[in-house]
Image 1 (tube, rainbow, N blue to C red):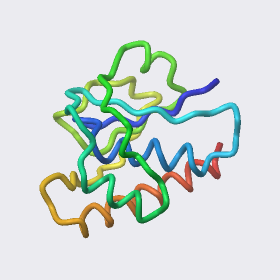
Image 2: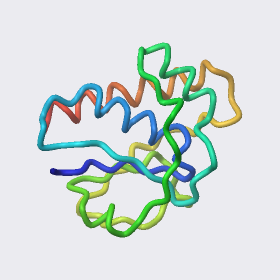
Image 3: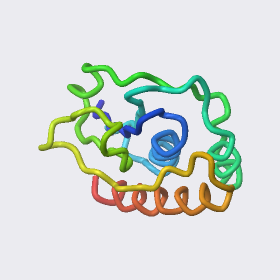
Length: 129
């Protein structure tokens, strides 16, 4: 099994949406998406849950996870979500930063905008593996 790792600071919105979209769109059984955060929050942001429900994907039962070194080692590819200072250092040879705005504290429209950007990027990624 090859892991595609999505990382953001709290693992409460962007990386959770990326993981969910990857596992929804990916049909290659060799790959699975996982997500984690450098400083995970206690819960998933409600805006992320609501935005994903609009796409028919329920992430309401997901729990933020702390990024662990074994996740980084096992990952075939790592995508950081634009968390710059808040993201941990990951190996540059297998890390790409998607430079996504953090929708936390913003209206649902911002969550939708970020969600749609993530879905476009994930679909492109899935088509390349």
